[in-house]
Length: 162
Image (cartoon, rainbow, N blue to C red; front, side, top):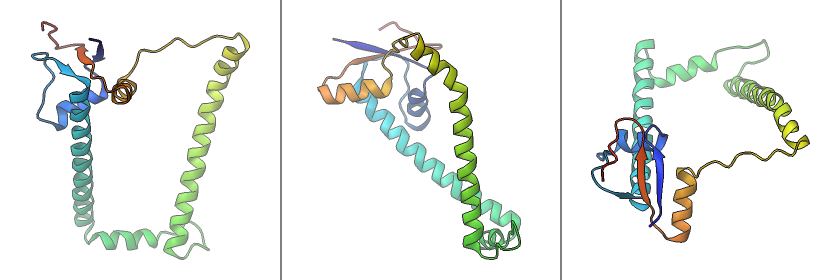
């Protein structure tokens, strides 16, 4: 039977160990199908925890400011970036447009920084090194092929004695 190795410091192990009751300690073999369910369960609980934490933080901030969340939105609507910006929708539109231009600018700068590497690979016909299969690729392959690989974890604080 095929087996795949994942690093214990990866994001999916963090989701499983942080938001589910299961721990990955090597005491029993784990297959990829069971592990995918654990990761999905951890992602769902992580999302629920993040949403609840955001709601609680926004309520605490609005109480500290001295009002309700609607007062905070009203204050945001009163922020004027220039003379002609009088309504809440114009202010939100200006904020959205500014964020859009900043995002496009940052992506353009990052693309220009990577451009010499891309051109040199194309010019010298350099093939990138193949990467080992990650969690998402392995999970998709096992789901499509209906095969559950055995999962082994390597990294610190792990005993590979089974």
